[in-house]
Image (cartoon, one colour):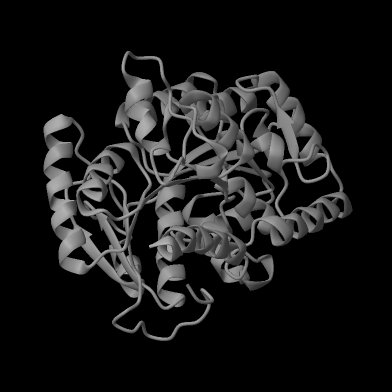
Length: 387
């Protein structure tokens, strides 16, 4: 493929790349798919994304085509039906390569790719628990691609150990950040003023942001309990993201009330303007109790020159250099998190600015979006060139 920044229209012989995922609502995987769709189109290819739909469909359609398929459905019968749908779509649209980003759609894509003879690429986006019988087999589809992309060395090592995936099929491609959008110099003050007013953030209050879906393993409860332990009694916590289960959101609200933090914890839902939300914060936290495969919000926060605190496991050990580009605390340890939050909020403005410059420089050098797009297109080219 050509340069991903080249926006020339594709010719009839351009490669057609189909990406599959459950839905296009919000989250790191969804944003990753959007950037790859743009890269394929920008490189002169034809981008197709298949999903069950969502709020991001119009964005996908700016780069190519969206196919509405019930790929969020699980279960053997649903997967077989989706495999037939994908097989038909591959043949109808002349798809040359399929890229799967989630397990149930990946099983359907794997079957469809075998039937049509097109290569399959998978990205192993999560660590995927194996606590239930049969889960390792179910997860194994993410390691069955002709190329398996891992967003970190941590994930690559895990895939090799769990699934005996040979190095010849594994590629480490860290996720990328669009540093043109995630740039503190382009966020105008009006965006911050409107956001702070809408979220009722008190003037001058230290703001702690935890971006991500409201789901238990993301550690929102850990952060709320850490807030109760902090010496700073004026800090406000902002929890962004949709709730997968409303019961968990109610549980978090009850926890905050029980700890006397009802006025200091805000659950603000999905946000469109993540750069402004990051800019509004004094410190960004990822308190995940299970290892993160990459942790895109960490990279995005650092691109915005925000101090970050991450749980000390998973890919954070590769991306967060202790005391240089952020800090790590033991997973689930609210006392350690509280102490680190107090220490970061006690830093001088000059100290925070120095950390901020170092963190953005790291993102520009290692996690810039164009770097990720080019590396992924190279993976596609390995397979398309072979064909």
